[in-house]
Image (tube, rainbow, N blue to C red):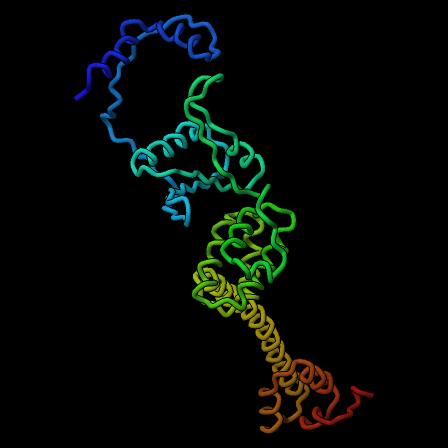
Length: 319
């Protein structure tokens, strides 16, 4: 039950809304002159559910200062809506769990990181009531790890660093370092990190570089990404095989057709000259698949006196 003093202390402001103008002077708070004041409904109940979710919420225990809550938000671009939602997250969680709350924002570009790092104040410029100060991690303060031994010391940190440096001009060296560091890592630990880096790079040009490294340096893993790359390779191989097969088939088809045409021409010329064609000659000519050999026999067919002479090494056509 609300006590009488409690009731009186706030009701006086309902009855005299302009009271705060004088009280601020007494308290030494430098505020601009007030133009007007009016009562607003005190009911803050939300009649319709409003869904609010943080990206990640962790309860962190410390050795000396007790537990606290860590809110992790990933921010890809400036979002004016966060100026209201982030303070809400912090105050709501503090009220629900009665624990200190730390807001961590992860960014991948300098402009967004600088925007996210600005304190969010609720209140008046000269006397903010609530100030939310996000802790920001991004390309401005995350290390660009290009040393394999350093990456292996903390693979999770190195993975986050690689993701935050997705647009770094030296990202190729950073990703190469990660691929080499993960080569000597047990697959159960390396596989999710491989996938996280791929996911974190999104559709940036660096994503293809990572896929290439996974295909070569980490080809022995069976992660979803490596399997996807292998499947793509199988499809490309089948397509290339079909194309090469068609090309080879057309080439072979042309050669076969040319040989068949030459063989028929040899027999026609011999027959037209009235030369008796032995069964051995006919079989040898029709079973030969070399167009160049048949071309030589075709030229000799115009000069020989017997059909078998077209197979001689030297005929009048060769002289």
